[in-house]
Image (tube, rainbow, N blue to C red; front, side, top):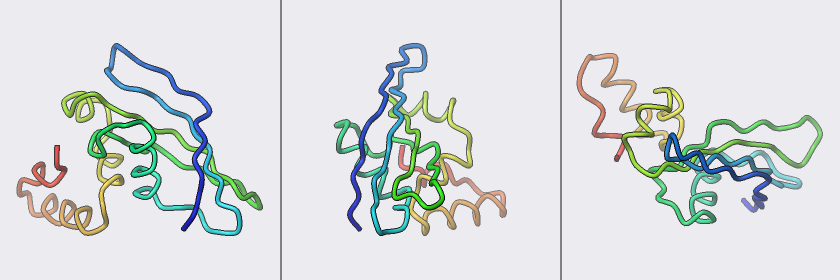
Length: 117
């Protein structure tokens, strides 16, 4: 899948130790790329660690060949764990790890080690 990411706005938030990014994804003639592909490309563009990059949301526009999104690049894992909700952290993982976390959470077993940070 080929798509281009254009960063529209980048804001450093020193209180939270993160960089907040608004971006546009151009995907002419194709479906909206999944969150993991966008996360990998955005982390590579920012020179950040993949584990500390979070895609908050991606909104597609009906009939358009572009989508808008917001992402966060954190400096450390403690800030990421504190400020990002659990469901957003889980959405930014691959599907196998995601299902394993939900399975362990239902059983009441520890699952934090599966996040990778």
